[in-house]
Length: 332
Image 1 (spheres, rainbow, N blue to C red):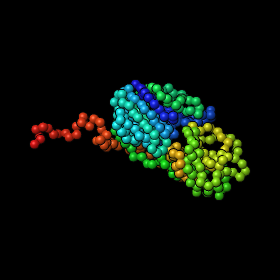
Image 2 (cartoon, rainbow, N blue to C red):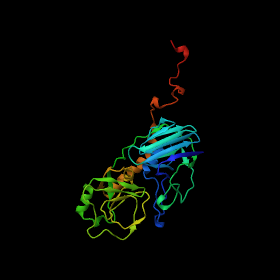
Image 3 (tube, one colour):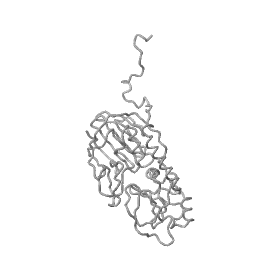
């Protein structure tokens, strides 16, 4: 029982929730760049959050050797099964032998293909996710056969999804170095509209100010200390760098603030050129936002609803009983 990879984009990996608990050993948690999309895929299949194929910008061609349920979430990509269109933010049932083609992202960056069940891969330090910066796992390549432990469950579901794929406002808490930046500089940081630079990966991304860069009057180097995803470092060129899932665990650049975990999916899904703004919030506001985000995750499985299909997209339409209770004797 496998998913055959006939072709794969350059950034396709298997991701789950990562490996918490190894920060002291120099290993960041890693895991899916958009954890909300990972949860959405699981909800569409009626199963706990597990692992999925994370597709950075482009998917590939995949063939299932067994009847299989799949869910597509995150950045929408053009997808078909044996030539028939597949809706995004939805789950689907595929027959054995079906070939799924997934193209480039129309907006956002990271798309996810979740299977009903799990990709049955060996765990390393308690997770199946690839952590490329740490040398754990690898990129999926042409010719791979990914083993699947399939499970029955619902399909044909969709989820209402708020737009988080085009940038927007990111809520920020002060960090250990925020007070080193003058108040006027912090106010300018909040007032600035940044654009997401073309440079970026699972470790982090650079954002470009419209005006001059940011920095400290007395130098950019500080004592190296622990850093986490969401930290906004200010390197020597003055363009902020927002850390993501595979960031290093220590660093010596000053941090002007830290993006809330609940807003990190918006950071990860911001494509090149997307506008981003930063808004400092209080600790109480941050806890309220995180509580609301976790409640949203809890509600996801109950939010999935049956998808109304377009008859033109159903290749075997004539095999369905469209009208029941009518017999030939009832016809005029």
